[in-house]
Amino acid sequence: MIRKLLNKAMNHRNAINPKNAKGFTLIELIVVMFILIVALVLSANSFVTVLKNSKQQSKIAETGMEKIIGLEILKWDIEQAGLGLPWYVNDLNNNGDYSDDWGSINGYTEAAASQTACGGGNNIDSYNDATSNAPRAILSGDNVCNNGSDYLVIKSTVVRDNNEAQKWTYIWNDGTNNILNCWSGDCNNPDPVEDIQNSTLIIAIKPKQSKNAERVLMTYGTNNDKYYSRLDQAVANYTLQPNESFLLFGIGPDNSLRMPFNRADYYISTNNVPARCASGTGVLEKAVLSQNNGQQTTGGTTPLIDCVADFQVIFGIDQTSTPDGTIDCYSNDLSNDLPTFDAENVRNRVKEVRVYILAHEGQYDPDYTYGNNTVRVGDSSGLNPCVNGATLGRNFNFATSGITNWQNYRWKVYTLVVKPENLTGE
Image (cartoon, rainbow, N blue to C red):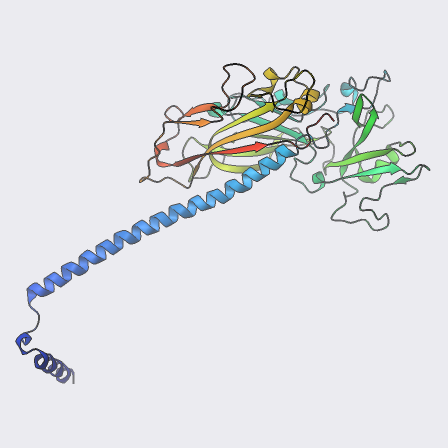
């Protein structure tokens, strides 16, 4: 049967072109095979290139999404710096001065002593305001971390990643000594989602005590030395005069509070760095200070951006003798460029925060070469420094950074320009 079919096919071919009755020659077959092999090789190389580029672009897109989320978290935290912070404390020594009683509050403390972060011998308790000062909403360490990167500290009630710490409400005396605490506007039907829970620890702040004492932290107890309460005890603990109201801010579900606020520190960590990151880079982390022990606990640490080589922070400052709300100059270090580095000057004079983050996109690419030995992390022009000749940010030198194979990564400087919404003396 097969032979018949072959004979039929050959007879048909001979009938069409009798001159080709002998069939294909060996040379013709070799030529055809060579052409097929070349085509297959070219197709294989193109497929490998497409697959490699696709993998690289996929990693770039993935890291891009991660960075967007991390930058949004950092931006929101900076915007909310100072939210819920008390400016003064209730007059515990009855001398009419509401600014000298911080040290009299029982239990007001902050970061545990001798705890370091981000290398470089950076002690996090050096950013404490407790026990005798009002909390500064934002502060930083200039070039104190690994490879000369910065350290940023933000204090507010909402900087903690906890639902209860994101909420606030108020209680008020309706004029007849009837204290209303209707968190959602309905005294009989509290909302378990929107309302602060009864077990949540809160602080109470009086919006205005006098012309020179606003946002006063209220105390209670036998010696007026307690500054926090459970929500369900707030009405009993705090005494309100007729038509007086207190703001209540949720701080957290801890057993006790060290601080009448929450605090988060931001820095480049070299722990748990993803394998795709260049050797010598780190992770920009947000570390929330524990209210229980003042430690930067693992559970309170959130990775924001991977593969970070540098992190620089610059502040826009109002330096006029009477602050008018405009930016006069920019500073790397608030402690040097504010008249006094205290809570009042921070909230009155810090008008803008600029953050610069040097990180790479995607992963190692042996076929890519980054062309610059140095990268400007910060503004090189257009910003007026508070001190003549001061450098705003720095030139990051890859050659001396200790980053391995830095030429084979796609580097990018991410910039945030944020105007804090809760820093105001008004």
